[in-house]
Length: 147
Image (cartoon, rainbow, N blue to C red):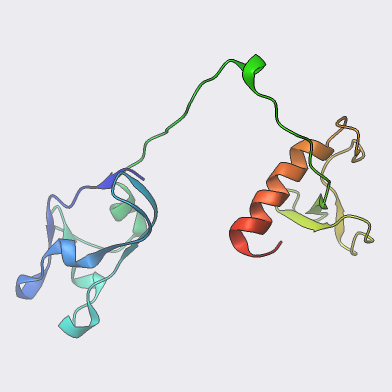
């Protein structure tokens, strides 16, 4: 998220809308997680918030005030030389809902109810689905303390 526009936000008792916004992760211009809540000591709740004269009832009303941006970079692919990394996991999906990706340690049996996410087998030689999945799993493990 880039920014949240508080124009038209009104709360009773002189509560400033900016007091209801807290960046939990990230920073202004690069917000990864934002919490909207009325400070508890005011005795008010989000249902007391008016946005553009309309009482807050849906999260979409807040979402309409958020600006999202995409930041990217470009490079000549011939200048990138990434080392291969060991495969530490394999991606699986629920048989009942293939939209949900799960990761399991490589070498363990796939639990009941799950199936491989990719039809190509994992390989350690840089071919097949392995390397693309490995990068995601390694990032996930570091960022979230486990899979």
